[in-house]
Length: 219
Image (cartoon, rainbow, N blue to C red; front, side):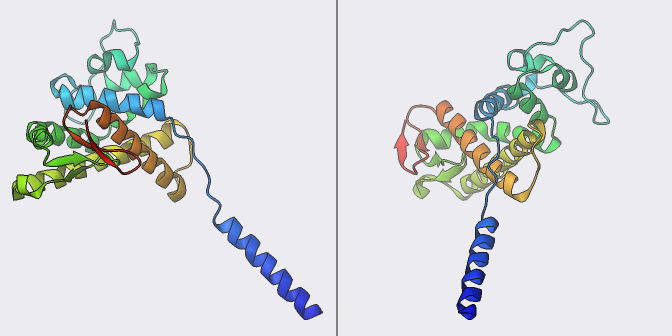
């Protein structure tokens, strides 16, 4: 009897331990704010890179104009210094855009993506490549691409991963959530999905895009 009781108690303890081990802490993800931040970053640093604020030698951003008043970053991001906007922004999307744009690796990534934009657009137009549900570029028709195109796609995906990773870092920081392996993994996955959604909306007619359900369709 005692032996059976001990076995039963051991089984219960093991079950409880396993249940505790697989508990996942859900994180807060500001999807709408992240989407607006991606749009602002694309507008400022990808489509209109000449308007992006330049940094002074020494790494400090330029000082804000003395007479300028705080405005929404989404309206005047290209005209306002990153530091001044960070203090003035009241919207989470504004804060995320400022935080991500201030990262040197993101600046480099967007500069590289801007340079690839014409060639990448041509590949999308031809149907050679498509947009995955993680916001990455994948080759759909190998007969339409060259080794140089494949290298371009790989480099583009590397840059996009930098941007998405930076967004995940910014979200954890701005929302004051603990940056652990679990929270980062969850936020990173959602940041990638939101990035993909933003790019799907901007895709041109005829481009191949992958929905969240994994199915491909042509816009």
